Image (tube, rainbow, N blue to C red; front, side, top):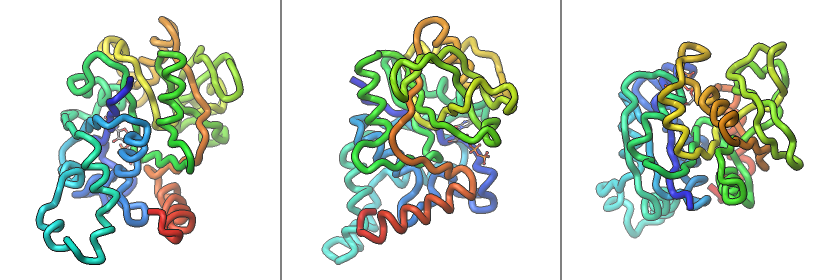
Length: 277
Ligand code: UTP
């Protein structure tokens, strides 16, 4: 059973400055809900209710968001506005929250290694909240948990991206096992288009087995001088098995302004206007 989900939220969010000067990127709202809450709800719906944040300086608002605000509760109790708190109350009631700090921004691999103290010796999910994934019937993490039960190895979520964008992603090569499912044979972080092994890019959803920590400890800095989870996963794929899964659903790259605006328009027209947010 997987119960833990890690949220690396230590990044600076420089693409959203000055909005992210004193507030975390993950707290920027898509319509009326902070990005990070969408991610936590996706984890919760997959049964991953032990939530661990790898935070950094200036990220305290996240911890406050996932806690009761007694003053607010008191103010709106019994009024027609109470329903606006339903979704966050539900998350707080059903999940536990743990925090640890990544003291230096040494990359996603390093952020995940920092989460070891919260994870221990069990498989766990990782969600990058700036990739907002939307799926009506079954969230992406829930889809991946099902696969994990079958394969018992690390799994990365992938999608096809245009070659012009491929250098922004970790990219896999793999042996196709069945439609949308690959056994990873190669992985490269941010390759130039002519060196990319495919157009299958890794998005911000992972299930990792705990042996990843030992590998990460030995992983030297790679692309951009950062410790890359992609490099550690390639090692894991060589030693054993890593699967890549073409998820069902729609993803918005909310770490970029274009993706953020697209997500906002989509969530407003498809969900908020129909009373579904
Ligand atoms: P990004 O590089 O997309 O996020 O990292 P960023 O650094 O916050 O954004 P920009 O590029 O400055 O605008 C992807 C995810 O990994 C986390 C980030 O918080 C983000 O969710 N991350 C990245 C860490 O937690 N620690 C790191 O050292 C690097």
